[in-house]
Image (cartoon, rainbow, N blue to C red):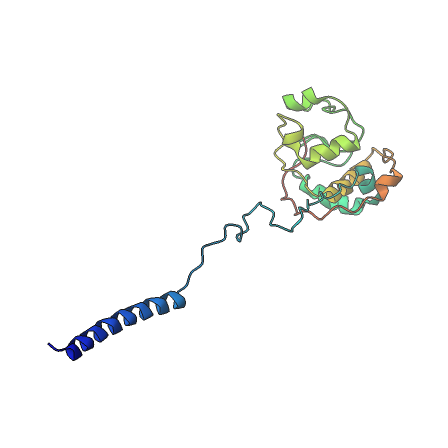
Length: 202
């Protein structure tokens, strides 16, 4: 084999090596990948660089005296329909499943003679003030442990205030709590989801 043939074989081998290297480099360029930056992903609950933590301000609760001052007795009468299945509202109408609600504001708790109150209600004691009634109507079982009343409560503060003002017209006629000037300037409470209707309060 002469030198010319050897040169041809060497050139072919060299060309093959160059071709393989060229394909490899081209593939690396076309499909180039970069390592992931662990700081490039925002993890929930972690503040990204440059951002400031902004705490959501709690909604201001409107004081009950303010709500009562703005309450509508006619709207409260409509709310009382939720209680009518178990309670009477007329003087002398007597008890039903629950005690009558005539003259309820300012009345002694568990104060209707002859009605069989639950042990929880008897143990509560005190007087049905606007504030006490407001808490009880909001969450009966949560406020008076052991109450026999199955009513789930009225969750909207404005609706409770309307009902309280209406109940006050039924023989009670108690003076409404005085509105503090600072409280009156408080922002209005956000609208809440309508509470499901239920029984009434005993």
